[in-house]
Image (cartoon, rainbow, N blue to C red; front, side, top):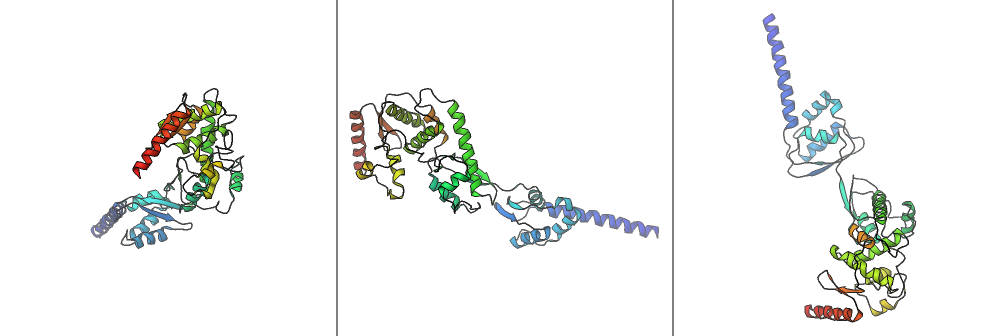
Length: 334
């Protein structure tokens, strides 16, 4: 009898050990996942419903091993609500570790230098992973929600990439971008060059936005800034096309006409003195630095060179000659 008992106990031990080894093998074997996948755990989800989701995706043949593991390790299978990125060849153990850690997948939203606020709102509205809350608000109401002093929040959002989890409110992206711009502008204002024609950091932000729209060629931005500094010092008008375009709004169809240049809007720097009343886009870091630390020069004019760069001139005669050269290039291309 004892011999039979020992055999039974031994067999039971071997069976249990074998079962646990098989369980470990099943939990750690690579699943047939060939590319990055996103999976969302909804509120109220359980291991049972999660295992059904895996089975429906074809990642597991049956739910037995996952449900057994959950029974044996309840503290390791408390899944968290969120959206997670599953890597290729992940195992059940890898996936459980991920979805119980609340380490959600980070989506990205990028504000590009030179983007206008209206364009930014459109881009936010087109992002499917954000919760859209500002679409019913006016621009002035958005400013109020963000505690921005100006009714027009143009320029107040720092161009960079912002990471967020699925379901984040679009207003939160704006808050973060606004805080980043405030901090950046404040720090750079403290390190600004002496003798600049700005009465406030906001005026520097306006200038930075004009520089940003004039050129995306970063090495030129401090020189562009010097032209505007020189013009302001001489009480000359800025005469910059991007401000005219901004003032036209929806009426701009791709070409600036002589009538546009004659029209007196708050943003037409061919008709007004000094700076326009607000930024005309979101300036990037390099443009802000250029506005606050412009290069020293004796240039008062610049015109496109046709390749993203500009020709700078000291006198109107030099400038007119450069303009003629540029027009010749355009005609030759046509």
